[in-house]
Amino acid sequence: MAALASLWNGRLYGLEIIRFLETHSQLALAEGTIYPILNRLKVEGQLTSEWVEAEAGHPRKYYALTDAGRQRLHQMARAWVSFSSGLTNLLEPVMNHQEISQ
Amino acid sequence: MTAEMQFDNYLTNLRLHLGPLTITEREEIVREIGAHIRDSAEQSHASLETVLARLGPADTLAAQYRDGLLITKASRSFSPLRGTLRMATQGFFGVLVFFVGLMGYAFGGGMVITALLKPILPANTGVWLDGNGHLQSVGMLFPPPGAPAHLVQGLWYIPAALIVGSFTLLFTTWAIRNSLRISQRWRSKL
Image 1 (cartoon, helix red, strand yellow):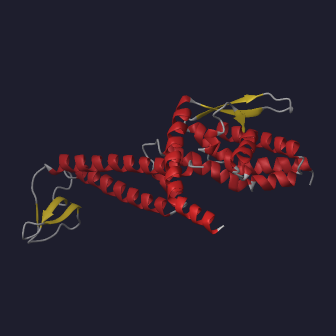
Image 2 (cartoon, one colour):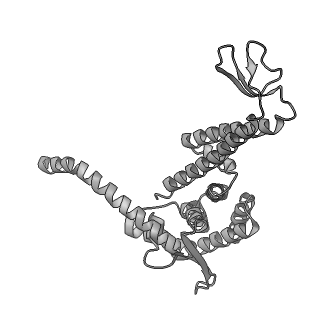
Image 3 (cartoon, chains in turn red, orange):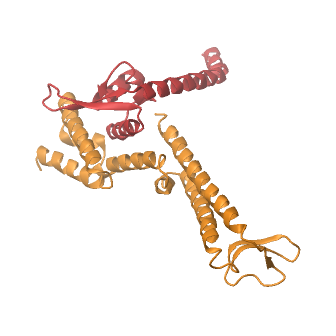
């Protein structure tokens, strides 16, 4: 879900996705983990990719969401928000207790 | 060993362990990882050893690619059992799906085979009832059960076994493909 979400605003290449996840979600991934995931999402039709010549001197493989990927991400995001709000409700008494103790 | 040699060795090792994939898939992956190594070294000013250590061993990286693609392809295939074998190495759910799938294919395939062999071996193939009229055995038996068990006569067994066998094979395939998709969804939660 995080990999798909990182591409919501536009195309990125692998290393940019890793950096994006680190800075926006504190998800520190092993670098080797993200590429097989991107590859699988592409095979599943949720991402497209294209090689783009870069100033770095070598081409980079950029990924972008397909319509199916956007739809799937939307579904996953809704499920996640519902799940996390339930968990927040569950933890509310714990957090309140902590605040009282402090 | 120079940095360039380390770089080449890593990609050669990766290519080697991506063996089961098609050449196009393999070269695409090697090209992308090569670009990543160069970018990562340039942008973080890290040594090649550090960049390669962050990527992990080439064989482990290749295994992640192989597993992901195998399971994805199997979830769309008409013979997805191989994908479940890979899944079986990754946890209890995979082991369960593999063995249930194996039993489903064995039963379904067995029923279809006995249906086809019924005209050739009529006395050894079919449904046997015990002395009280309860079901004793189904399929093919050598030698067939003796009295008081008896074979239910008639060629009705052929279409019945074909229908039950085919349905079991289709249902098993459907169930395995869905299990593989569920396992992928679990993996995609990242």
